[in-house]
Image (cartoon, rainbow, N blue to C red; front, side, top):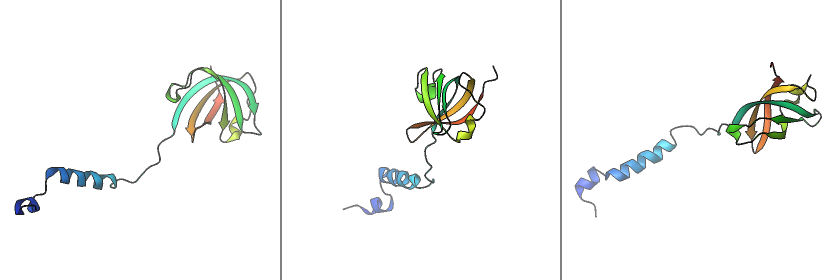
Length: 110
């Protein structure tokens, strides 16, 4: 049975646990930011109807993707307007629910 002093001054570990639990609810939950990276490469294939593009690109370090040719979803597909196979492009890609999605795409200025 706790003494009167213990009732007036709960043990420090209990206070720390309570503070940690309260702190968890102090901030609103936010969805995790999607992983993303920027890259450049050469257009190998365009499929505007399916909203997909294949780009031979350098490594995408932040997404742990080595240099390769990879097919990406493009959102919105209108980003592909004016592009042709063989064009050099710069792009931003995000990993959304396990899928690589290009969200910015333009002809390279180089």
